[in-house]
Length: 197
Image (tube, rainbow, N blue to C red; front, side):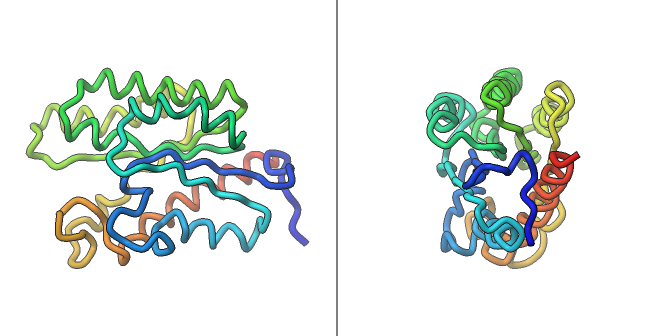
């Protein structure tokens, strides 16, 4: 018998994922992406669970911030997984703007009664040490400022291994998807556990 936690007590509990190509599964079959793998894993415990993947390849924090109110209104999620910022950094957006947009999205979700898990991002070192390190750190800063869980940039652990990146050198392959999924799934499970206390 599966006991639903209070935060997941409605007939169709919803987890909303707002991200870019990493979550949209760019270049791989959708069913092989980390989002689909996580849904399969969670359905074993919470079969009523619905994951809404609102990720768009190429999306930025500005795009996510603009889309979020409608997504929250339509889906009324209990949890939002936020995976944005990489495309902003690759375009050289000021770090304070990225931080501001991420925090705006977190606050909007929280005001709608939605919990948030933030996924950390990193960019290649050729953007300069100061910018690259500042970008990496801003996710920790947002996590601490908004008191939300942070899943560190998981690709850092396997990005240099053979077969983990597509030919563009940016997007993960099918082989990498379970490794991306694992720490996010653990964070979701921890969220479910804390919601029951």
